[in-house]
Image (cartoon, rainbow, N blue to C red; front, side, top):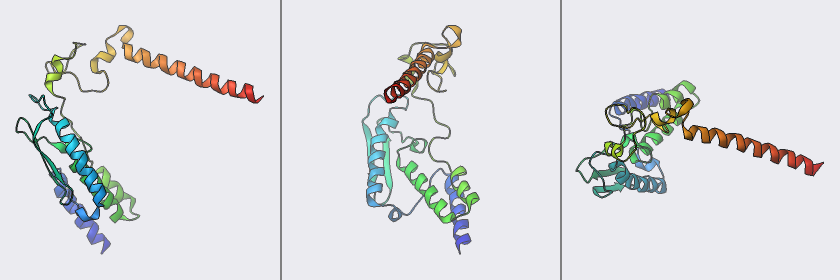
Length: 198
């Protein structure tokens, strides 16, 4: 019986994974959690819209969420519905995460099954889109941009982190300086503590 349930759950997951949509029974989650999920979805919608080209306002055409049915609408001011599955703190993210929790619970003590629930069905951004291209007009030119005039999306500082003298940017140098002084303060505190005790 349990293996039939797990197989049907994994088969359904395979179909929903291909569509990047997961479904759960809304009643399997507390009403307060579902309301929080919807509140977060409605908060994220305008912020996600700002990532779309040509959108420079947080006004939306549609932004609502139903915690009873676990459905939502997010339509940006440019009449585009963004792919909110690529973001955390959205309803699809919470549903996907809860789907994983329920899958793991159904696996019981089978660690391989539990691992497959999460590893084969990740939630959130797997291939995030680069930020709105209008950002490049407000950012100073620092090094070579990738993909035309778009800023790189490879972490903090991007290309700018390696353009200063010696291959290290100012932010990197300040971080190293802060780490050194922080460590010195910790050691001084430890030694002062021992001095007071003795």
